[in-house]
Length: 499
Ligand SMILES: Cc1cc2nc3c(=O)[nH]c(=O)nc-3n(C[C@H](O)[C@H](O)[C@H](O)COP(=O)(O)OP(=O)(O)OC[C@H]3O[C@@H](n4cnc5c(N)ncnc54)[C@H](O)[C@@H]3O)c2cc1C
Image (tube, rainbow, N blue to C red; front, side, top):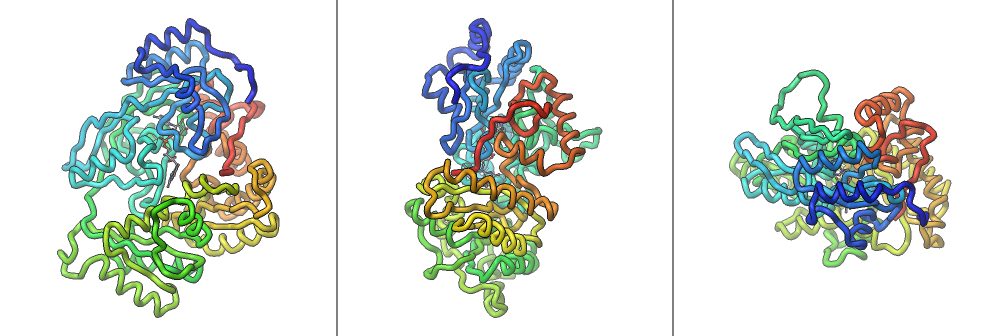
């Protein structure tokens, strides 16, 4: 990181900022400022000029207005669990981080209407627990749910393990309140399922990664809570079996498959090694496994057709006969189900703790392309980088793979791994684009994939994105260096996917 600040805001600006948020909202401790400048993997690319924690939409509006008037850049921030280096500064000392951590109130729960109104800084797990306390369910669920905030989930359009059945965070939103880059407040906090009044403005801000404004409140959907859940861990011969099993399970379960996660043996071993307290679900080691969940909102046997677990058992018995399943276990207790999910969710943590570098591509392809894509892409990557260890895994049910690679054994530093990752980048992303897939399924673009987006999306798509950015943020102050460059000469400070 350079030693000099680019263009630090004046002390008069800082005084005005402090006056808006008061002592409670101004972060001054250098360690805390450093914390808010560092991403989840410990990567610090830039540093903040100031970090503020507003408590109301009025404060957010006043902060952004002040920044707009003084051409000071703004970085909206949630729980800093994003993986694309998007929620932290990438410039040196001329950006104000606006952390939403103090705007953490649940404003309304309406179980009858199946809605909840929340401030942007509410932690995802709090939303899940609040829904459950009303016998309802909020389906977005991620490994980072104890820290990430709903504003961050909305801004990254987070996915997770239930997208197959419920859709991603975009599907959860009914209305938003947003502070625009000039400080004005757009109040779109409506709880409408039908609203065909021209352009769908809320959808602009979902997935925008804070480049178009700061989300301050949201009306989100909640759902009936499942009363009968079967969680199965199934060893399978290959990814084709995963596709076939999922297709048949949707029919056999009455279309109640809520998750279907593909897990590679190398990834599983890494989690068992680095995340303490987890049990291997099956006695033998297998190259491929599926974690599948079926859920019903009716209690077991209420419909006279047996529990979900019984139905899954019958389904698996047939799958064994067809050779689609090699071994399987169905969780007999909540603890066993939690263990299976902890293995699935422990992959990112295991990579972070692993002393050997690894990288991961968050890509999606049409579900039916997955088996062939894995085979071709593995072969191409191993040929280009001998010794690389592919361990593709992810959300089989919605076509989203977290295509991960362990570095060859002799490569022990991120710096040595970087040129290899560049090669893999090209191979993986070009193959994805060739079959009309996406180079970012759920993690976003951030600073990491900004140039990849320019490489992989058409000039028409990029023009539309630039036009939207220019229209809403003509001064370019809102989360600069993330998602899209308006000017092709704008320098890029790139983050990295290497862990
Ligand atoms: C262990 C682990 C597991 C994960 N699993 C998944 C997964 O399964 N699926 C998935 O999709 N992601 C996953 N993620 C990524 C991450 O958790 C999500 O991207 C999450 O939605 C980020 O939320 P956050 O509050 O931490 O946002 P941050 O990281 O703070 O910010 C992310 C982006 O949103 C912007 N932003 C934040 N709040 C606001 C706001 N109020 N208004 C406007 N912009 C805002 C930031 O500027 C930034 O661009 C995982 C991460 C970890 C560490």
